[in-house]
Length: 173
Image (tube, rainbow, N blue to C red; front, side, top):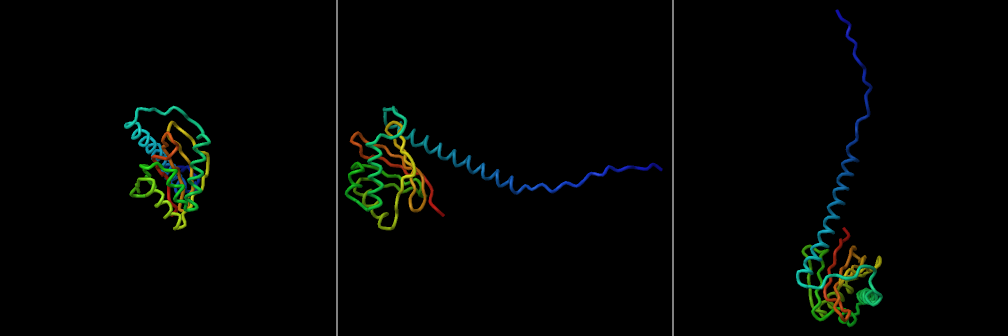
């Protein structure tokens, strides 16, 4: 009879797949979130450029006159100043709250001022969290609000009034 020798292989610790699965899900979620933000930006950009022949011409930090309007807007929302809000928005302005599902869209400076004043009366508040940047006639401003945070994108008319605003963000759980 032949004496068979067996190779002894030491046992290895079991591989933990839990953490790598979590990391994959997290990375996948971050990629999807980034794609959603880029896609929304492309949608806003292409939607606007289908209706206008004026391409964006400037990039960078928003000028002082615009940042003053945005600071006045935040102060007016936080204090419930309907009169100032009415002046900040153009008569036919549109606000699209894309952070809501379904999106909430309202128009007209009087209606916008009334709705934002109603938010104030319910305890809503805004806080600027970064520098407003300009791309052509669009300005983006990072904000926190009492129920979440995100970015507001504004389009201004030649008189410095907001004529279109998109709110993109998330609400707290």
